[in-house]
Length: 134
Image (cartoon, rainbow, N blue to C red):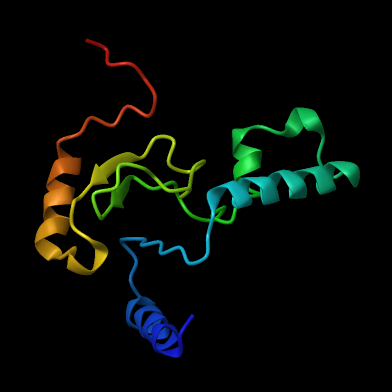
């Protein structure tokens, strides 16, 4: 990562270190498939050491082996640049996430576009995989 980006990242971390109401994940050199394979590898290692039994592996225990184990699953994923795909991003974690697709490229994604995404999200009925009762 170029030095100017490293400095920008450090500044962003410092500027937001006391924030408590929103989590923003920015993934650098991240791939969800690699994350899942790493989790399976760790579970296998723990199983071989007899620290975990196969019957104890479930969605909750699996989540504990992911990079994001200490973070809640995202409520909203905003995809910029007009792409209609998730691009290997948090594949496990976004299974019940609401998706918002914007034609704006990331540098142009401004406050107005963010508010548009939030308003769209607020209209949604979150069912987490359940079928509508109607």
